[in-house]
Image (cartoon, rainbow, N blue to C red):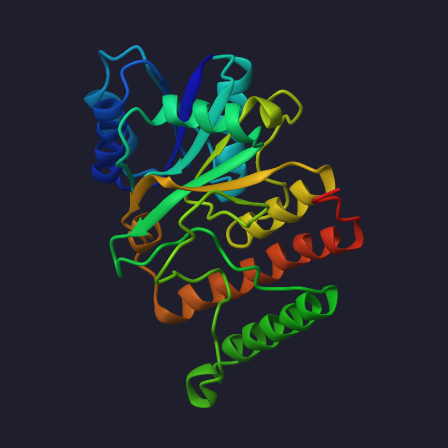
Length: 287
């Protein structure tokens, strides 16, 4: 069985190198595919040079930034079609693998649960919180439509230059950290997108990992809804652990407050519009 890690890289080579080294410290057999999302700052060349003599490291350079879903799907397709991977772990570049013998333990979990997608305990190094499992932010199409309208209003206010004057509530509901986590394997949960593993039960049937149409935000919730419609089992295992430094790639961009918030608003509108489609499909989880 071939195990492959796909690391989405954007601008921060130090994090990517540390992520890859953490993999090799726990695993001497798996492949690593690094997908550069058109960083354009020389960082991917630094990664390439650091691992130029390692045949297990494959590097893909996108000619344009395809966003979170598109970038991950590029690596997923390469791992699936070129490396013929049975298990594909999609990882942010600011993830550190903690658990020893990670692939072997994932295979044991698959033999035990027949999961399609699994998520480990993801510990944030920002606040020591636990990012898995996630709570579903929206429970109805009506809620999603309301949020789309809210973000459209916020974007309009910002573009008019009135945002700082009015200071409206701008909370982005993309998931929160938990103080405690389940102490046992948990089924049919929403998993955090910074690190998740797709098993043969998923890889054999699905040509892409994340649903298309988004650039950033809400991808985990969309995937969770999709898995329910396909009766794919999503599993959280607290015995496996990774650390997450959080948002290093996004923070590397030098954006003004206005540019940053309008980036968030535009992409939340786009992602929620994709998410809305899955509320019209039957939910087969637990069938």
